[in-house]
Amino acid sequence: TEVLPMEMSERDIVFLIDGSDNVGNTNLILVHDFIRNIIENLNIGSDHVRVGLAQFSYNAKTEFYLNTYTSKAEILRRVKGLKLKGGTILNTGAALDFVFQNHFTSQAGSRKDQGVPQFLVLFTGGKSLDAVKPQADALKRAAIATFAVGVRNADLAQLQEIATDPNLVFSVKEFNNLPNVQERVMTPLSTLSVPTAGESTRIAGEPPVTNEKASLARQRDIVFLIDGTLGMGKAFPLVRAFLMRVIQELDIGPDKDQIAVVQYSHDPKTEFELNTYTSKDEVLAATTQLRRKTGRVLNTGAALNYVTKNVFITSAGSRRDTGATQILVLITAGKSRDDVGQAAFAVKRAGIVPIAIGAKSADTSELLQIVYESNFIFKLRDFRELPSIQKELISKVKTVFIVEEITAVNTEVLPEVSKRDI
Image (cartoon, rainbow, N blue to C red; front, side, top):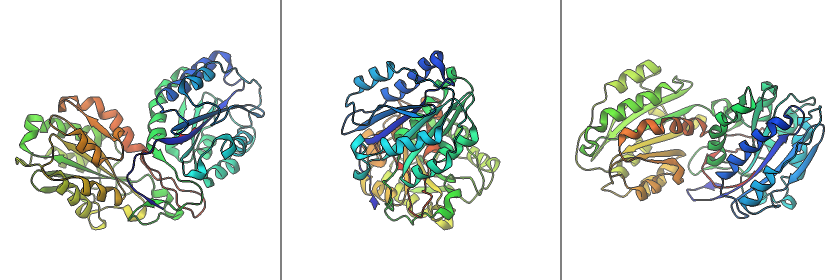
């Protein structure tokens, strides 16, 4: 299946909530708030995001299906009125099987047969008495991306068995700490897409990823493409400092994150390639030495073509062929003189995830052509606002990754698709 850049807004998301005494009535309000705050940020509708919910303790109970409600207001009211199921025994494995058999079905409103991404968000406050791995594996084989949120007595090892990927495990000590992970849950929930089971899905032009390469799925090749024209004015030192702060937060190494920097104006210039430096200290030292390229003409289209053909390649250190995530971060202060449409299309066809940061005279419509969806754009008035987006940028960079099934079927998680069943 060829996945090309297009805007979709469909997802099916099922929440599976621990309704045992591990939560209790006092903390249930905090759980309500956590779920409601996530739903508030979703585009709810029968043709957009659908939400279902089940509770569990010894056994599981449906609260509402994916096709029970079609409006955000109805779902929020239902969640607010949710009563605790109760019970002292927690059988999470059986609950996972319950939602798989009863919620992720066409009768219950799932659109998996139409290719709509399927998501399960598990929330638990304790350790399961039954096994969870067989049921979790069945969800993965069905291409249902599972998030595991654990509080207080939740067992981390079990959460890791349940979640589709370690990046989708979220653990907090107490219920009042839940707001601390809300954004971390929301980002992948709204920026990842999973194909239906049985599909072999990949970005056009990208080699298939096999299970043998699954351990490489969280390696990242990150290229910063920076506007070096006079249009940057005196902002270049601000951009350089921002770059250093972001790099400081990454796990740099030959088997971890790799960084490259390219500047451009009329034409592009590689400052260093993905395989030039292998340690964080070396990358930071090289970044410190960056000086503005200068030039009056901004050819962003040519620069996009350049990084696709000359930087995201094996000889320059790209690990795309071994499954590493390819990320491009564009930082620009102006409108391109040349066309960006075809070059942006080529970037996406090459399996590269573009993120765009625009300030000053950067053109929003142009940035929209470059990225998959609008939430991969950071639009600023000027570059002094860069610190305000640092945390969110790092979160996006760290949560764009590849999810693979246990079977030989390839399931890549691709940027932002917006239909989901939750």
